[in-house]
Image (cartoon, rainbow, N blue to C red):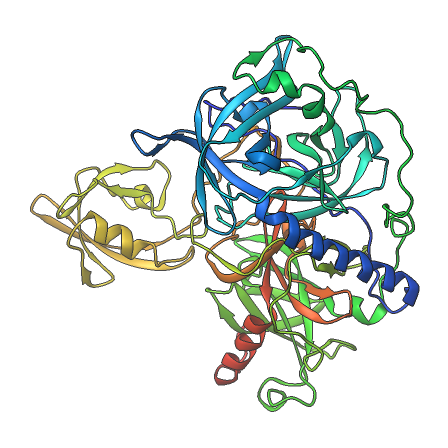
Length: 575
């Protein structure tokens, strides 16, 4: 088992685990029975209700020095239960320390860490820790369930705070129990996690806490939670602020995995896990696009849009194919093996519009779309190209993903607060280094506009994208140089953490988007560009990026329609 232990002081967040979308819930497709669709809608309704009820108790946390009013640790997740107690993981807790507790409704309080258990022979076990609110308030709380009653295929739900998204609202994920108890004492599920999710709650379909996020392995379906009965079992010991390196005396003798029968009717997935088949009409909406990108053959999915009967048909034709622009080159472009040309690209949304040289049957009817907000807990389905559909659950309301890894990279850094902007670092092998930028050079102009100071240089550079060409005037002593430089993507840094090594990896362009959704669909980076539907078959958006182990980004229908509308003034194809 590849489990990485995370120490609270080492800002290395290990686990984040669980990735859930495993059920093949292709329930909205035509050949799936109405009874199956009804069952899926019933589960969706139940989960949406549970999310609304328990989400207020799911908190974002970090260490906090109350005297200096400063953050002192990495972010992690937790859940508040009755009487202001907080359940979380031992690897993020230090007994006696204080922590800031941030609730989804915006309220903030302070908690103190009580006891935790980490065995001397293996500090990753059992990963149990307790905290308690010291701030006075009527804090929301969740109910504790019974992890002894879990069984394979039972649905489960995660609500926690991944670091990479850095959002104050939590993110929702869905999955099912695969093993109620593995050898090391954890619950194994497909409910995905990643850094920042450690200590967050795993709920059953009734909204009871059944586990707390602890660890992952590299495969996305391998996620491990501390069973909630472990907290009950050692409750008295955990109320003392100390670290236990051996198991303390049990005050609750309940066998946490006693093999009790699962109550009838709680596992709605029993008949759903076998759902297969993809409706032909939906499968025809996804196309394979090939091109040459930076000298290499590249494939990506695309979405076939029918414009028949719309106001756009006259300008754009009866259909177009839309995909992820940064994964489509400018030469040797084909759609389903047929030559195609680029109509328009948009860097802000990373969309590209293609016109194939031949007609294709099918395509998404723009009259059957839903551009309204998608509710958390909604099941979303992405058809595959000659593969089974991928299912996920919407994890958030819309939010902005600031440009970080998607920013144009120069590789030259100006000294903080310098005026004029004076370079103190030039990265070897970067565009700046290749153009003979040197430490000590002054940045005088950027695209013909004067640069007053380091802050102005940084702000201006943040507006550029990879592939943009910038003209920079440098001063070096009495000499002046003008350089035209093509920016690149920032260097990709390799990590050993399991969350960074999933199959297919992250999309190169994965941020710099406004008003997007995330869901927990397991798509490889080269499977983005295809359409997303809800259970009722409504077109809800396009997969625009695989952001992280547990998050795929959806560009909404409204952005797709706006892109189409903005294209009518630029209909001349280019190769």
